[in-house]
Image 1 (tube, rainbow, N blue to C red):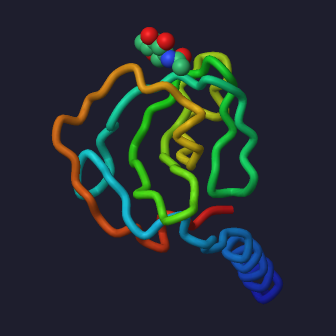
Image 2 (tube, rainbow, N blue to C red):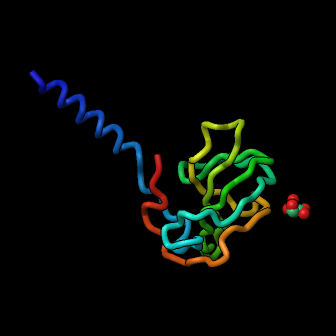
Image 3 (tube, helix red, strand yellow):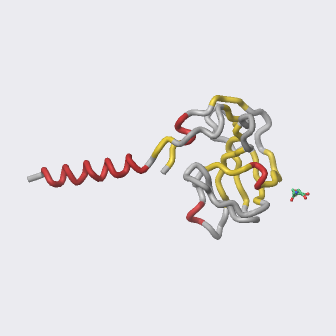
Length: 129
Ligand SMILES: *[C@@H]1O[C@H](CO)[C@@H](O)[C@H](O)[C@H]1NC(C)=O
C-alpha cells in the first residue's frame, strides 16, 4: 500500500539532488573575515547592473547595497570575484542569497573586518542549483 508513496518520495528526492551541482571553482583560495567566512567583510554599492551568468553568481542592480562575505584570490588571467549578498528592501526575494560577482562591479564603502584569513576554497563554495 505504501509503495507508491515511497517511490514518489524517492523520485522527489532524486529530483532535488539532481538539480544542485558542483560547479567549477572560480579560484583556489579566498580571503574572509574568519575561518568560516561567516563575518561580513565589507559593505559595497553596486556601480552597475550585473546579470548572473550561472548559478554561482548573484544578480545585482545598480545602486544596490551588497554585503561582502569573501574575496576570492584571483587566478592568473582570471577576473577578481567576491561573494556576497544583496541588501535591499525592494527586492526582498533576493536577500540572503549568497553568490559571486566581479569585484569591479562594486565600490566598497565600509569595511568591517580588521583581520582577514586566507583559506583554500572548498567544492561546497561552488555548489548551487
Ligand atoms: C566610491 O565611494 C566613495 C565614497 O562613498 C566615493 O567618494 C567614490 O566616488 C566612489 N567611487 C565610485 C567609482 O563610484
